[in-house]
Length: 76
Image (cartoon, rainbow, N blue to C red; front, top):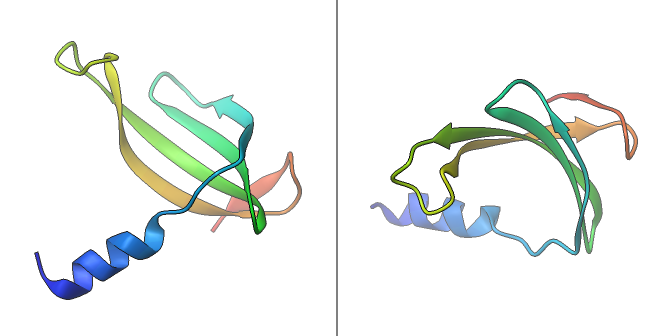
């Protein structure tokens, strides 16, 4: 991998303190609100299902969303 890709991946990691809200959207998608040291953040999470995975699911994609309030947000 290129150095730029590695730096971008490192920048995306952060520690969360709490998962405040999980809203399921269909079988393999959900919206998640997490709390960290900067406040609350919203994410749209896509899952992938297979019996090969340890817990039958794994995270396929994570996209940040603009958080309007703790319980309501819109797509970025």
